Amino acid sequence: MNNLDEFIGSVLSSLSHARRIADEESIAIAEYYKDNPLLENLSIPRLRIPEMTLDIPVLIETISSRQSPKLKPAKDIVNHLMIKLTDAFKEVDDIPTSFYAEYEKNIISKLTPLLRSKSNRLLMTKERVIRLLETTFTSTLKTTQIPITRSQIDRFKLTISELSANNIFSTDPNSLKLSVNTSTSSVKETSTPDSIARIKLTLKEEGLEWNSIESATGETKRYLEIE
Image (cartoon, rainbow, N blue to C red; front, side):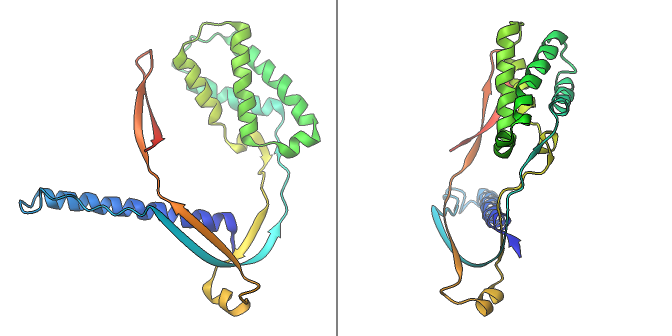
């Protein structure tokens, strides 16, 4: 028995690895063609699957309710963030400590109402907390008007985005879970065509490629973008 999200994730992950294996084989063929005078001018074979449809029968075993996330105290979240920021800027001491103090105060003032509101707690996600930390950083920059470079701003925001769920929540927020049985023998033995659930996945192949951009300070940043 597997959680439905884990099962589908495993299927998608396996297909991605299949793409990698096929690409590695194309590279090996390219090396072979290069060393063979009769083949070196021919195109290198590379298989692409523009679209694939999977029709998977499953048995739904159990459904577990959503566990409400429990945020850590605002001070704990801030402490985790400040430790990460101190580590990120340990070799650069251009940001005054007064900015950190103001930023910390502003975060606590915005997080505290969220912690007190039950409806907000139920809707709280890691992404929402990260967004709050980023907008608070931007507003604190405007009010303090400290001199800070674009590179430092980017590093600051990157450090904020790297906060993990464990830094934010004291309990792991779980969404609704569906436990399914995907064993072919079980599906055949314990179900009928009318009672069985089917998952139909239509997958289209897309690729990512590395690109790079150079900032005004000369720093090169690499990122992935869709082909």
